[in-house]
Image (cartoon, rainbow, N blue to C red; front, side, top):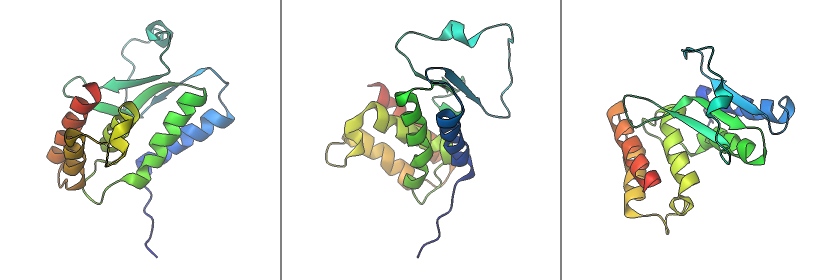
Length: 157
């Protein structure tokens, strides 16, 4: 029987999901911030940036095309909890390659989330198949970054 190797970074999202279910009031907001993220303006309220109809906010890295798995803002409702749980359990879909842990995985996860037909090999576009192929054979961070740029193209098309 193969040994399951848990990914440390995915454990934190699993814990966020559990925390949302057990400790956070329904319809309130949860801001997940990684330990190496600093607050730039403590006088600005995050509530000022919330838009009606949005329940999940990701942060882009300002220097490239990456979604950053290190922070997200999510509403504690059925959709928000499902998103966090889906991301946490995406750990079990990681390829046997240099996958980039949760930050690399966030990109295919979001492609599947935003473009549901990409989940199935028979309905997936050639471009989304190419993105996943890059990820599946990745050997370096350069490959992971190429996959992320590819996925952002598919997810935003």
